[in-house]
Length: 481
Image 1: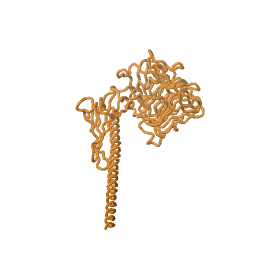
Image 2: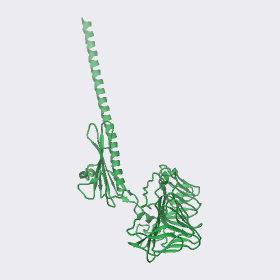
Image 3: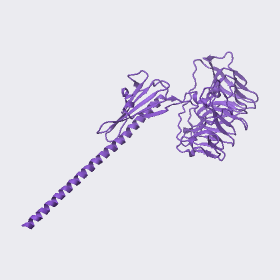
């Protein structure tokens, strides 16, 4: 009997231990399951938080794209903001699909949408199947229209230099080294030169082939790798004093972007004066030519100056715009001969608009404003054929050369541009933008930094991106959403 009771007692103890052990395992499993569910929920919410930021960024991009249309009429779903006549709002949601029954939308508010310095706030919202909504808010400010000539040389599909003594540097015709505006603009000289020369390639596979040139400043490429910036044994990129064959780390960069809009040909209020074909000496304006505002507009078939001493001249203190009718494949301007040239006298201004080819040799282009106003001569390439869709072949070619110094700007985003100053000691002043840029010879290119402050007809770009993470910042825009 005692033995039987002892066995019963042992079995009871084992059962109790098993029950306790099972309870512990149950608690552990329950805790593990709860921990796993919590971790899953946290992971899901972190994922959805990233989705909310993606939505926010998408809203910002939609707003920036609309700002860059330069239109004061914004299409649906943009509508006038209820609290301001100068603001617009939009909500994008119908096309946003997320997995597991999750919905999302982005709300965007643009302050001063038609002004010179808009501000954009976007709020991306993700609503999970369970739990509270997740949202992100970002403010983009400092939005300003950039100059088309913010850099010295820009080639959408790259740049190349030939010659052993070519160089790129800069000066500022309007401000001194302390940032104080000068009493009068100054031309380039050794006393004011600086190492802020800049070159850039836009396409992600495009290269800056520096060769043996010295880029006293910076070089950028659209690709992520700075190996696309190449230098020869005598070439360099960096500040003054950079050793031959080297690229200063702080002077090279990848992921360069630039929005290079198409050129819009002017449409003056009055009919331009008809010139037809110009083959001999001509000084503009003439006494009977029509003036619109302060500018003389001319419709031109072509300018072909050959032989000796043929000159197309713009008189002092006069503004002239040449609108060429020659189509793609033809020659709008062709200047050859020992002394043939285009000359702009002091105080004068010349704009050239054409989709056709330009060849300027001879004495080339003579800028009577010297280098204090390189933009007093501006060449605008209006060809709309993108070489990227034309087998890489540019439908417009611009070749600028001559026997002396060259001071002008050129903006032709679909053209192949080749530039050369005069002889072994020629210099080129200004800024060039094209599909491809080829600098030949042993010339020095000098970029006027003041061009980056002028001609602000490029894209709008923000200078500040700020996520609104605390309540105070978000409450600033609480009335918007």
